[in-house]
View 1 (cartoon, rainbow, N blue to C red):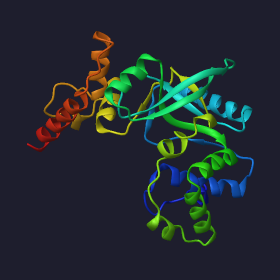
View 2 (cartoon, helix red, strand yellow; view 1 turned 120 degrees about the vertical axis):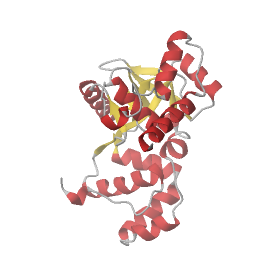
View 3 (cartoon, rainbow, N blue to C red; view 1 turned 90 degrees about the horizontal axis):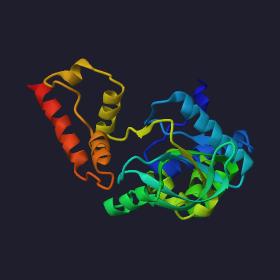
View 4 (tube, rainbow, N blue to C red; view 1 turned 180 degrees about the vertical axis):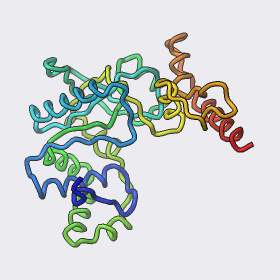
Length: 263
């Protein structure tokens, strides 16, 4: 890999700041570039389906150059730690369904999440595609001062100095949510998307993939269930019920494993 294409950040200042830095670099090299944001801590059980989904968001971004295209996973339960996409009217159904976005919901309450699930809203995977210039335009509308500060810092070769005084900015909450009219969404029901943002979800993937690690099995007869598996099991038995304390039970199970290994 060309290391000149790797941009280390001096500090963590949120997703929006990182995207601004990357976009400025990209636009300097190719003003007509189409970019895709793909989080590094996500898991897809079907690589082929995920590849098809990526090609779909890129194709849609090329077809609708003034929009940013989001990939939304089909929701399985009322998750309160994910962002949600409330889709609107369909603007295309070939080669894949493509929808307008009515609203972004960031980490809703339990009651809100249950209602979003009932209405067929999507989980926000954060996989996003669009022209680099369109991305930057959306960012300039939402956080103009951040864009100006990053652009000046890169010109002055002082990114570290800019980061020291830069506030943390969340791309979904502070940029996309106020501008749903600039967004389109493609549903994904086949890639098996999971956000690995917590130990409980990592444990769930290990269990589903039948991955048995020696250190994981010490002191236990089976892989502990995570919050997702508690929710999935409860949802199968009672689709209207969300298991609000599932993640706490999963954490306790993980803590028990650690304690057993240390004894």
